[in-house]
Length: 254
Image (cartoon, rainbow, N blue to C red; front, side):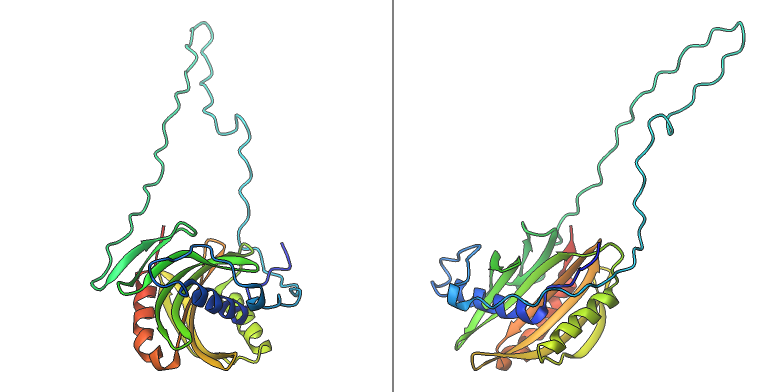
């Protein structure tokens, strides 16, 4: 598989910002899951993806040949009748499903119906669920307070990638796309999310005379890239970064 390129993070953030603002227009009592962006708010799609060749690290397992793995009956001794062994199917117990952990104090636990994960979110926020739709994808959205024209949000997106694509390649491609958009990401931090290596970085984004503080975390798990994004009003950023950090700590793949 060639031609893979991650969702452009700058475009993703801009669209999710618009979706979050629209979802809160009707007030907290009437969230609309799956709300579409107004036509005037849509952003043009990014240029056609450039070819990105990822080295295959996993070799598909060949299908089993009938009879190859079956027990071979013993060779009967001449003159001695030997009963043909009966193959009895051994029931295979499916792996136990992971149970979402309880939420920390001051948070609620959210189990996604869009992606296989659970996460904590602030009790004072709303879990809109798969409420952010945009050209090319859908994401879970957690909506917080409004600061003027800006709604503080956290979004969670998962995207299939080529088998064997490394976190480093995903990071480099994402940074290149941000650079092409004139965005310089900084404060890069290495950490783990649910036991997987991850990177967290931040930058500011200005759209329609509004400046947003963006913090993003990315990691790769089972041929999927995950992008978790905090979008905040600059004056709320210092207060919300620890909240976002707790959400990353609480992330649990199911």
